[in-house]
Length: 301
Image (tube, rainbow, N blue to C red; front, side):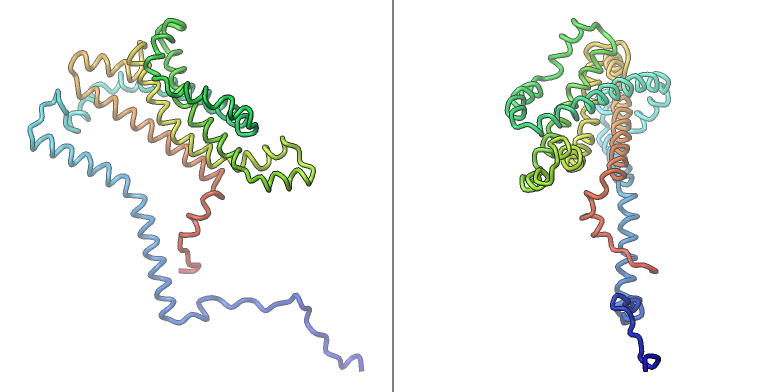
């Protein structure tokens, strides 16, 4: 009878998968736990390694200066540089803020114009072949030779430093963005066109996401060289900034203060680099999934 007929379970119903630790042998579980522990130790080492390297460098530097009795005007010891930073912390803070401001303004302009020009060049082969020689020639000109011209045009002050930071950080952004967009697969473009996508849609939905890893790679380069541009302009034609302070210190043979300016600039560059990496990880983490797959994680261990 119909009441005696057993109704089979739906075909889509599947038994819940058994937990991995229920089917693993004790030896396999011990291996997994050891791998997870080694991975945690590796992450802790990666977090501490930069600090250990920096501290080790300063220790070796200090020991070498003391051991070979190097004069302070030739190469000051890290302790002498630290003492100079404490003594002149107000001028260092004031001038470093000026350098940071000019660098960020020039870098921001380079990001905006570099991204726009990179998209245009990467999207058009005519622009690519037409503008690329001009960009290479522009980047080949020594920026220190351009600073006197900027002084004639804009006078001594902040503007030449901003423009120099812009010029020196503009090229890597343009090249990387253009490369990211130009390397979109032709087959993918053809499929999207067949589906009715416009060229602007292809650039906006495929080209720009494809270029984002290239873009952030260029940012990490551009932000560091932008400081170089600002310092170059400040050493030639400025009345304020780390470069100007270093020139004044060198004229008085205050070498520890010169090195203090270099260290402050390095700290600002590292801070901006870390900020760029943090933004990159939040926005283009999908591009690093190959590296993330190498992280061994064991649930419940």
